[in-house]
Length: 598
Ligand code: F6R
Image (cartoon, rainbow, N blue to C red; front, top):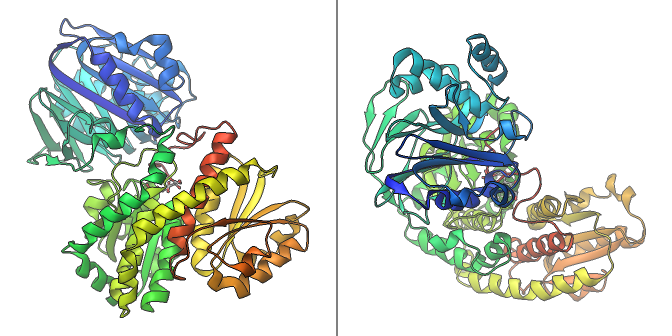
């Protein structure tokens, strides 16, 4: 996945480079192998600067902030086609340097296209798929002489999912195309911009036009025209004002977005609970699930772990069996069994994850598709029949934190609505305060734990029943930012093989609650009697505490709440351990926040 941003003003701006640099910084979480900017001036000159490295590194060398012009494009690259090197960094020129463009996504027929363009006499400078987008549009511009036809014909030969921004050097227009990867327009006072994601637009304007797959836009500084790529038909869509604070795109004094987003959780829980109270579609959502023959909760990574916990909530609270499934596995496993009586709930922070979009593409019309999504206007949100927004504002750090919290809260709320027990709904009122206490309690205990001389380079996180999905999520968070081996597992399963790894001092975290003492004590003792080091994340429980070496306590709570209250300890453990190791938790190596590839 990559990030692309383009903006056009009426007049020459001496701060255009600075604006592009800021936008690039805000899209860094989407790619950090290479970065580049192109600026175009009214006199017909174009400046293209790009290289391998982070935004800061490349800017230090090429001084993006000194560039001026009236329109420009910035791109952040997360390499898929072409090794990270200067010629593969984006944006790219066409052959004669009278067009410049960049993309986000994956052109799967890049190798064939490159061969064809070379045979046709194009000057292809690198191996990057973004360059093929530019040559495809150039090919048809040279033949038909206008950008509309060039974009539409170009789309016919570009196979894969992508979004792109492209401009000619000699006019006052810019174009963008959405074909399977995220893209938004921002409508400002005296400018129009297009970007892969909202963090780069929101500080400039909150007037957003979400785009749909199969659409392209011609825009100038004061107008935009959306058209269907296939039919060429014009589409009227007015901007929505997005209720997202510009503050969300800043660290607000925190050293990392990850820490800020972890600490925002009580406030985000409150926002979601307020939203759900007045959501007019909520009972429609609940009834669809209640009547469904088979219900699947489907997501990837962290979003999948929320589905694992959601399945416990529905079973325990509403006696409804629902099945969690990884998005990448769903079609292979259940695709052939679906009927119109079945419901798929797609769970995603970004609303753009390819593994989940494949399900949308294959299952629309075959089963009901609902969703829980954070990014308003994203593909999954727009294409599902009912959606609940996660109300988390922007989540910028690559590791998902607050969106996981609100994913599990949404499942909890739906299960509580489905259940006959009023107590479940009642206890949500205290949740923001309990999570706040849990954060406060965890911070000092984690700092203390990390001062001990424990080797965490290899470890397990085990959970049981309601804490199973939490253990999976804790382990993912740790391995993602610490770069160690850390496995999450159902605690009863540990003795069926993995136990052989235990030796003196080997760390195993048990995520539990005093209601699980009878069972979890056996699992703990299987480890401690082999000299393993047991750490419990638990509410107060003398039984559990006396059987482990270290304890991280969360506030006392109902036996259904451990996923909410145990989570901060695991997130903070991952965060502080990553920082101790010298890693940047916001930008873990090799990762990207939105995975728009298979
Ligand atoms: C882990 C993480 C990833 C995402 C996964 C799905 O912290 O962020 O595992 O959860 O890539 O992304 P979404 O939720 O955007 O579909």
